[in-house]
Structure formats: C-alpha cells, structure tokens
Length: 147
Ligand code: RB5
Image (cartoon, rainbow, N blue to C red; front, side, top):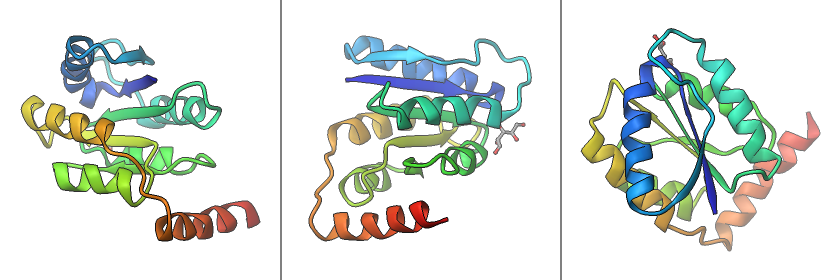
C-alpha cells in the first residue's frame, strides 16, 4: 500500500510531520508537494493528488491545507473520491468503516502533530465494513455517474 500525501503552504509543516510518522512506521508514501511554505493555491495540489488516487496509482491519500476544508472540497470534485475532513480519531475511524473514505484531509492550522498522527494511525488501520454502508455509497456513485 502506497499513500499519496500532499499539502498547500498552510499544511506544509504538518505534512512534514506526517511524513516523519509514515517513515517511522514504514508506510510507503509518495510526497506530491508542495515542497516549501511558499504560497500555492490548494486546488492545484488537491486535485492532482485526488486524481492519482482515483486512477488507482495510490490506495489512499492524505491532503492537508490550513483548515482541511479547501482541499476536502476540491478533492471531492474528483469522480470516485470520498474525502473526509477529520480532526478527531473517532471520525477518522468512522470515515473508513462507514464511508470508505479514500482521502483524509486535515488542517495544519487547526490541530497539532500529536493529534494528527493519531488520526492518521486510526485512519490507516480501519477497514470498510461494507454491507449497508456499501448500499449507501452506491447511491452516491449512482448520482455521480448520472450527472
Ligand atoms: C490558505 O491561506 C488557506 O486558505 C488554505 O490553506 C485552506 O485553509 C483553505 O481551505
């Protein structure tokens, strides 16, 4: 499993902390940028990362901006993407178990590295439960495919 990770300038510092966590835990990852705190527009970061996940190049993605909101909105415009903004471990776990989220977004200006790494740990460990949740996700896919 290889994880794509990306951020804008507002999420850059937290991205580097998450990368450190992934390396320490031997999780394979690809850093899709940004590579400094120089200002960039979050859609330019979130959309290519989401597209790479949607194409199946990466199993999951983690995208970080200042609040986690902008990148979540942008990523969810990509067909097949279920991006979840999570700032607590319960939501992170549920976003996998019930929503089969394939992208996790967080805000580097909202939470610190301790909580963020705990969220990533829960999110990577949790599996989709399927069953009734699959039926609900199918309704979203059906809508997505109809427009
Ligand atoms: C950039 O200043 C900031 O707007 C961005 O990181 C993010 O928070 C947008 O949702």
